[in-house]
Picture 1 (tube, rainbow, N blue to C red):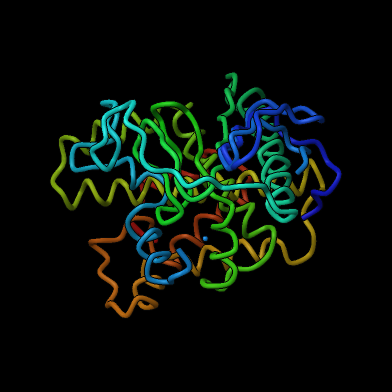
Picture 2 (cartoon, helix red, strand yellow):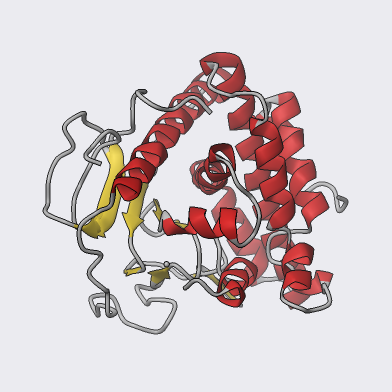
Length: 314
């Protein structure tokens, strides 16, 4: 993926250890909590156990930290029961390493690309205005209105504040422990979370939450999985336009994303954890499902091709 030296987002909040500073190149929608800095994309700028990583993916990534049996947490309580305003213990991330800074820049550029692509799709195809998410970079642990964000839960989107929460150390675990290496594998993760922002903008999250509230547990879980698969499809739509409109994809990038989708399928994660895959307990879909829906979005580049709710397979 061609990202070095390119424009970053204005929407990053950096909570990784450091002083509160403005990034010198600008950028509004990235909130980086890895040091308490608010940075823009070009600014200066680990739970290493596999079991914890797998548990995070199977039980807590994306909307799963936001979902309980009744729907999304919107009542001001953290997922761990802490009331709003009660801070969890957050370790000081200290000074950012060169790699930390580089990963922050990478996320910022990727976020900027999603903003440009989705703004165009909303304007040209949907006749609407896209309001981008803020992306919070943090190290190890931070607060969100949807619960405590930690490296164990993985990245997620919080509808309560419209922010994506991401510890970039997750990319190392994705590469080293789950075998999904490459910068576009990491970009796919960001694009998936932004897919949830797109769902939020289109009113899909509220509709699915309402449907889950009136459904039996099996149906409610199936709806959550379909929501995740649609976010994979939206990630594919973004990748299609990033290739066609921005020219930022390189040979092998799509293969990296497909490999990542396969490695984080619920069935694959269960086998890695020594468990038998149980489809009724899936949270994000099988490897085949995740690959299918990313490919569906990438091949068509159309939001209308991402109706994962109207079909039961894959």
